[in-house]
Length: 615
Image (cartoon, rainbow, N blue to C red; front, side):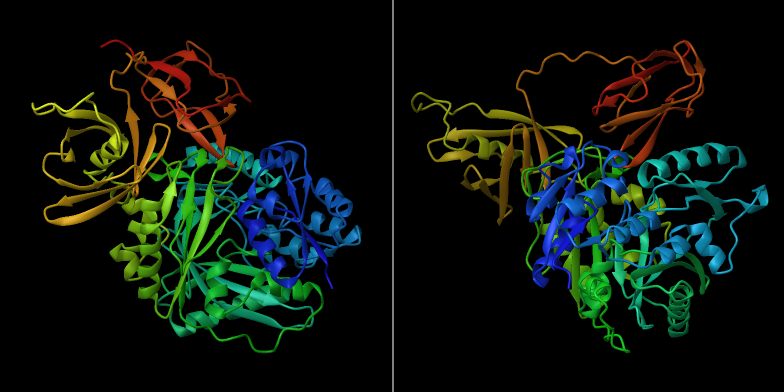
């Protein structure tokens, strides 16, 4: 029996596994980088061991350091989580060689399936060799890992070389393995997967299907179980293929077999030899704790011959610190408050007051709703996210709510091109026009501009706020009756709660202030100074950092004075394990280059200036 378990991962992943360990009576050990010293997973574990450094390559991807940490902390088992070293056969062998229990499949199974190229060979599928125009579009894909990293869609042959280079660099940074391959790109297919659970005695359970079609940058955003609208015959085929893949490598533990479904046919993508981020929807539908089942399998227990029956429908949404309207740019800062209504499962690696940094994935939490029907699950999750308290950096919360309520999703007609088609409408700015007034009234609570009351009417007070990228002015008055405003009746004005009568309807506005950043219900505002300082004007063609990150590459031969064309990639920023191209805004001359490779930059930092020729 396992008594002490180390989780070779961080954040939400580690916290989720620790929760099961606590229920099973197993002591827990966390590992943490220097950047994660005060992270939630390091705080909630019974023991935490430091991995010196901040980048994944120096810490969570160092198998030798993780095994050493497990031994020094007295652990007798290691769970890899999902991501980092979870599909690394050498790491699994190192754990076993150290005399520890490995919570995962045999290293040989990982070796066979963790490389997507070898997995396809096992399933009788060969990747593309030399790519021609007739093969386009194609997908460049990392052979190891997942999460959308190391993936590029190529629609023109002259883009292939740059895509290969970028994918290799991103894959090496995220997984420690820069191998990539090329396969046909199936547009507008549905991403469907089968969860499997296998013991060491020959039993393999196919645990239904999941639909993960709602993706951005090939990374899943919303997942559900079961996959809606699939014919019974296709479901049986998917189950059979998944079981075949598992048996072909004598699999044990939890894993996922992924497919693209198009025109009623299943196209094998890969087998993930680990637990998936979206496993909670399967847990909800089948009434299982998959982490507990992983541990029992590792302890040698036998699964019943028949899997449990599925009940109802579950949907998961991934809440990211990112701005979908700005090319999904990751966001950093303090997460002041995160809470969702009761009845919805929230898996997170953050708590109120935690800092969201630049080194790791931008996901804040997963919210999961389970209900008897799909329609009820959609409504439940959309309502919970809409009513959630979320104060801090910009997130994709509004995008999630709109996605869950979109007609295409409601009728289960979505595919992997959903966000390509609908991103503009899903990110259109909306803001409550009464939010600035509520913020101003809350700020004015308990304060009067008068040394004593006057008989003459008071002049209106004004405050300015930035909301949804635009400046708004709020006007109100102090009177003998209290605070008043034109067009509405002020029912109550407190520091944290304002109630306004708007056309006969009482509306509540909860106000929270963190310096100049204010949240009025779900609307973020920034208080502007009454007399703003004159701002220095940026030169035309200035390129500003859209996010915090590290400059990992500058275009070959790029120097001040070089002639560049509009759209040409000039440099690459890495933030939260993803690389982002910074391109020339106009055709012209590079007049300034302010950064070097390895330099860390903050949002809004000046990177370069491209000067257009005079008209």
